[in-house]
Amino acid sequence: MKKITIIMPVFNKEKYIRETIESVLNQTLNEFEFIIIDDGSTDKSGIISDVYARKDERIRVIHIPNGGVSNARNIGLDMAEGEYITFIDADDRVTEGYLENLYDCITNSKADMVISGYKKVWEDSDKVEISSMNILGLVEMDDILPYFAKWQKETGIFGYCWGKVFSRELCQGIYFDTSIRLAEDFDFYLKLYRRVKTIYFDNKHNYLYLQEAQNSSVAKSDYEIDYVAQLKINLRYKEFLELKNFFEGNNQKILLEKISNYFYFSLFYCDLNNFEKVFDSLYKIYSDIKINFVTKGFFPKTLLFLLRHNRKKEIKYLMGMRRCVRRIK
Image 1: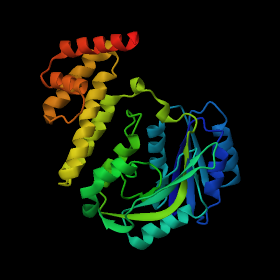
Image 2: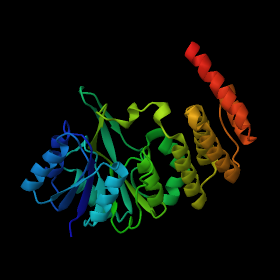
Image 3: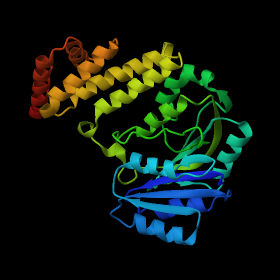
Image 4: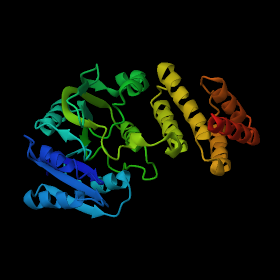
């Protein structure tokens, strides 16, 4: 059995993929399999991957019609044969000791998961930014959970798909939700964290996370984001903390503010032609959970007050007026 399976979805990354693949092949740990899922690329990403696969038997390339990154990762999970699993993005790189360090950390500590530090690197600059947690070593999940929302808000570390390793056995039956186009990795890990009892935090920064990459999802405008889907992810986040009996204190404060904001964003940025459907969905969600909205500003508070009282027509009128005023400005 291979020690580690590396899963890498690829869609139109020919500019970066050679460096990414070579950084994996140059690892000091050799007992790995590298699964590359070409997600219907229209550039040379798939061809480049095939060239490397013919040269190195550790690489397996699968070509599929474009179905999104979650579908590609799920295929990788089903194909994985390694004892442990890690992910890499096709425009990032890893230093030569990355896999060996992850493997040593998880096997020596007996942790359920390892979370590694990383470096942000810029495409057209020598700028480097080091990111890591202030907590190091083996930590019980119950000792992490009181600070979970704070650390996630400050660093995003619990949601990044890459920079982690866990056993294939641990994630059996857990998959990415293919209907989600943003924050699908955090949604995946929320399911996995339900099974995690210990995490080893490593302070090495062997993962190089490229900033300002082509096709970056951060380029999406607010009107393109499915905020109802983001709301549902954060409701599952709330369920996770409730299940662990840690939906209290700072966790509760931070998450209620996030959930309130996503209710508001779902209304504010929705297509008015789709308003009825969005409103009905939001009102049903609110009716089921009955949370106290936590938000700032007169307009957000007004919209959420009207939502709470099922005032659909008034909200649609205000939204129309607001957009008219913005166009005039």
